[in-house]
Length: 186
Image 1 (spheres, rainbow, N blue to C red):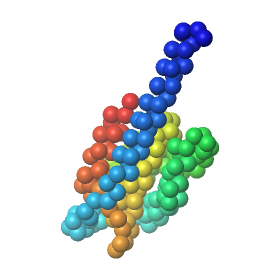
Image 2: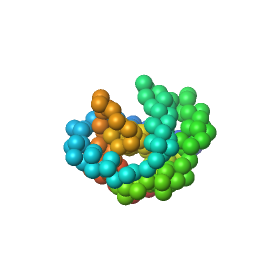
Image 3: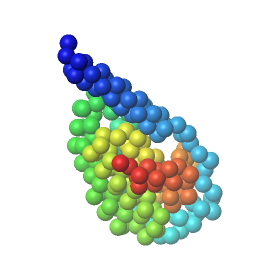
Image 4: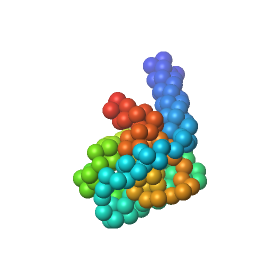
């Protein structure tokens, strides 16, 4: 066998293994630390009292959150990383309409008055771009977590909701990591 060809094959294999390891690490990072201590009642009340928006936006946030629950929850996220289902899963995601359209989240951001909530929605818009164009599962997880926190803690009331700390509006610790992820994405 030709030496150049052999080195090319070995180099390609090493690159593939490295990419798989990096993808696995990113996915593990996105999944770790599932919940955080809930935000203070005072902070939640303050954000809610800022006369956020109308009922249409609240319903849209809930619908988008449900959509991300469906594509990621109950182990469904694995379809985005499994070699046999990966291409089809990403194509399906790109065809979900509003869920995979960054403009949807920009328009929602324009409809809210609270600046921190607006920033959360603009962050989601950027994450959608990363997910769609880079097929990054970590971005999908971050989208879901921000939507979850906004849906349950800001726009709608839920007594038993988990809290991920992904929202800037609720001063979440994960929100800072997500912001760094978006701003430093290569």
